[in-house]
Amino acid sequence: MLAPPDRHTPRAHVFSPPEEQPLEAALAETRVLLERHGYLIVLYPATLPTRYLHRLHTVRSLLESGRIALLPVALPPLATGVLVRQLRQLSLCDFTPGVLGAAARLLTHYLYAGAVLGSVARLDRVPVTLTAHAKSWLPGAQFAVLAAPTPELVRLGGERGGSGGGAGGTGSAGGMLTGPQFATELTVAPGRLASAWVTRTLAPHWRSGTVREAELPGDSAAWWGTGKLTEFVAAIPDVSVLYQLVASVRRDECHWCGLELIGDRCAFCASPAPPPEPPEPPEYPEQSGAGVKGARPPGARPAHDDRRIHDATGPPPGQGPPPGQGPPPGQGPFPGQGPPPGQGPFPGQGPAAPGAASDNRTDDAPVVADPRGIRR
Image 1 (cartoon, one colour):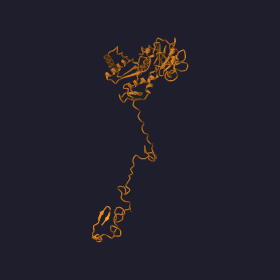
Image 2 (cartoon, one colour):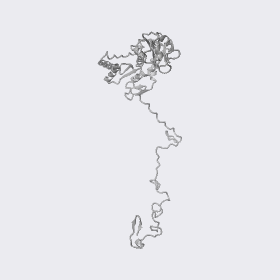
Image 3 (spheres, helix red, strand yellow):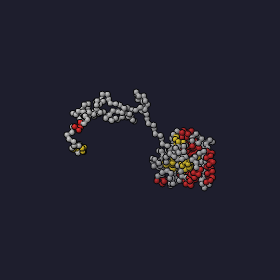
Image 4 (cartoon, one colour):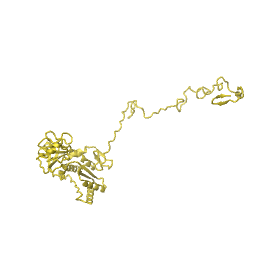
């Protein structure tokens, strides 16, 4: 753990490894921290051994608390310590626990972490060319390596040792690592390889305002693949700049735990951020003459039509026949129905009289209706 930059920055709590602290003691210790601070943001290296990671998840599960955030960090050891120090500074601001926990991922993009190594033969964190591997065996060889935000490799005192472009790319022209474009403070942790190149060459080239010296973390040699190294990190030192950086990001509410978050997931429950709300449909402008907001544009069909389709054989419901178009006197409701006055049922016949039907028949044979015709 790095020393605080000022007397106002709080210290961080370091958990003991499982072989040094029983589970009951770890539970009691964590419970006290929750009662005192309310929330815990736990940062651990992504290369943490499995038994240590199981201890963290066991403690959180047994306490049944959603106020513990477990955040893996894929940074070198010294850069992880600098990130923790920045979060300690921001803990004094008015950020909610969800925003502060999610800020850890944001701030990793503004850390320039690297080291000067005496050998890259066992380096597996940064792509290394075969030529650089071979030159690692030369006496007095040194390499400047940048692990974050973009991997780079430069051979000091000679040509660049990486392949250009992308991950594993080389530094800028002249054999120098690509540095930040904003004001930073350089933290240096010398190891068994005391290199003055960091303070005399790198710091002026990166325009670092201050150079702080720190103790080399215990797991730096395993992370970089060699004990002959000097580790360095360039980071934003001003807490006001860090505050503006975090505050400028859009905030959302976690749909699972209800905490505020920035970025694409919640730091406490790991739920993804809610999708953005769809835009509201645009309203049509006011039409001249109608004066109604949202009026239909010209030519658009209405959602419903009040017109009715009526039977062609009759007038619409509720209406009588048009004037002057009623049936003639003595006829039915339609033309051709009903005999005219003074006629019988067929043209040329007079009005039927009682008993006339039997007088007109020529014989008394009955008439039978048959589908095939009329037979007598």
